[in-house]
Length: 340
Ligand SMILES: *[C@@H]1O[C@H](CO)[C@@H](O)[C@H](O)[C@H]1NC(C)=O
Ligand SMILES: *[C@@H]1O[C@H](CO)[C@@H](O)[C@H](O)[C@H]1NC(C)=O
Ligand SMILES: *[C@@H]1O[C@H](CO)[C@@H](O)[C@H](O)[C@H]1NC(C)=O
Ligand SMILES: *[C@@H]1O[C@H](CO)[C@@H](O)[C@H](O)[C@H]1NC(C)=O
Ligand SMILES: *[C@@H]1O[C@H](CO)[C@@H](O)[C@H](O)[C@H]1NC(C)=O
Image 1 (cartoon, rainbow, N blue to C red):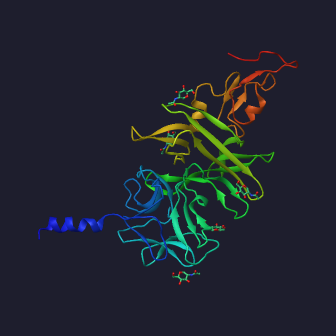
Image 2: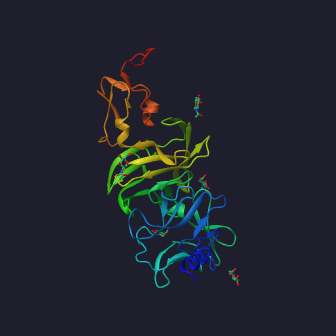
Image 3: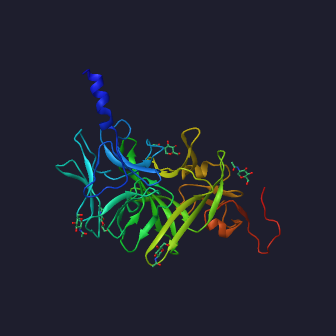
């Protein structure tokens, strides 16, 4: 037999397997992937950029080059040794090279015969035999927030949901920047961007709202934020309505939060929003009689002279909506305070 023929005969056996479940008896090995029921998300092994190291990650099945979550970001798989991912009793996801464990899930309530699947929202979940979630990747965010993921804190588990940037494009280990939740002096939750221990930007207090009008491209997006503050958690999450789109919010390695939308026809990511830098860069963000600065801890915009000018719409101003600008302070209400 000619070598090429042998190769062709072997091909079907080398072909990657798409699993829907991982268990104690069904493992994920190199080249295989674990796919969500509707085929939206995929978990598998990847190499970032030109790095030789391998990692276990999740991506949109249609966009395999953009990794959204990394399991072993601190413990790369080096060398070519084969690795497997399996669910070990009692209910722990284990990534190993058959000699040592490279990464494992931090399962707090382990349970026998658990199984792992990827949901159609991108959550890798480990479930016990009663289908109760005993561990989920949405509790351990990396640099990307997907619709339905939460930022904030769980008072029950003590877990803090925050984004941490990659070191660089070749290295998903934690970089300098984090984006999470903080409480302001009045007890309201707000987003904070930190570089190391110091806060470099605050996003203004959270509130439930819809915000639309992102129209840098031929699509209308309506984001809706959900804020939860109750005895079990304080959290912030978002969904995008009106279009079945592929999107992500990523904290990049230079500390910029970028909102991306996948353009199917062009087969590329389109930047929809980026901040904080571009908050000040964008035209007239603070509107009349106000100035923009990233050095201000509380908010980006301030009235030029706080004795002469006050926010035109104080309520919106507090929510980081500066479109009302500042207006001259008057004792008597005046009918037309609009600025041109
Ligand atoms: C594992 O979970 C516990 C309890 O939620 C937490 O305190 C600990 O930091 C976690 N460890 C890792 C490596 O995530
Ligand atoms: C786990 O699965 C094995 C094999 O199917 C079974 O024998 C065992 O009873 C199961 N354990 C539990 C706690 O259900
Ligand atoms: C976006 O919304 C505007 C106003 O509602 C509408 O005129 C336009 O057709 C919409 N564009 C798309 C691509 O849906
Ligand atoms: C808090 O809100 C979350 C999300 O809606 C919900 O799952 C949880 O049960 C709530 N906790 C309490 C104590 O109400
Ligand atoms: C991070 O995002 C900003 C703003 O979109 C961009 O200018 C910068 O090049 C990005 N950095 C990296 C490392 O991709």
